[in-house]
Amino acid sequence: MSQKPITLNHRELVDLLQMAYSAEKAAAFAYIGHAGAVKSPEEKKAIKQIEDDEWQHRKEVLEIMKQYNIPVSKWYEFRFHVVGKIISGSCYVIGWFMPFYFAGRLESGNVCEYFRMKQFFNSIGITEHDKVLYEMGIKEKEHEVYFLEQIKTNKLLPFFEKFFMWGNVKSFNNINLDEKYPVEKSDVYCKKEPR
View 1 (cartoon, rainbow, N blue to C red):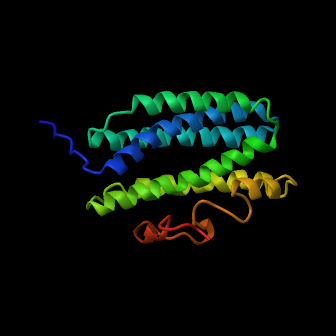
View 2: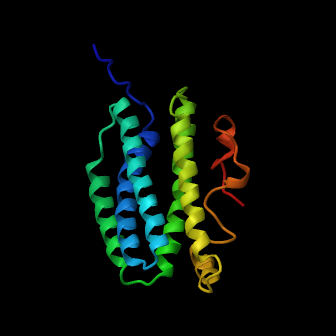
View 3: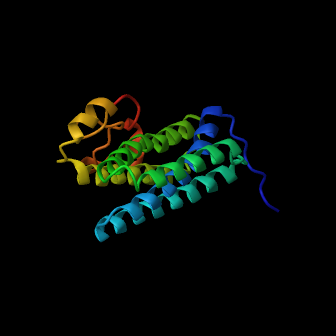
């Protein structure tokens, strides 16, 4: 006899899970275009791996959603499908720098989605997803670092960082991969605006 799914009485968490599930599809679509637009075989390979990571994250988020009987949002699926396809196509016409820049900026914000999910689950006494959410958040940070590494010496970066608030100095999360906290001490991440 199968167990009845638990209902999550946490509106913000439910919405965050639904949005993350659909947004991962948009990111994967974007990386298909990005990988297709770059010339370097090394860049193509690295971006393809990041695309694969996003599909895996989507699968893992769906597993969590199923556990709590959370439906996939048709609106988010439509919206992020369109956004992903637009970004994918734009990679072929906006040059080399901007896809790397905006991918890094997007990944920087995505990091905190997974740590917020962990904190929301913990606030209602659920800890079983801590490891997978932590790993997804850290993986998004690795993506951010990869994209920043490609452009950190580009002359356009200071200009873009000034207007779009992300780059060598600014990030949307407070994670340092060289000094990572373990899962059980990771509540310090994304609690407040990083400096």
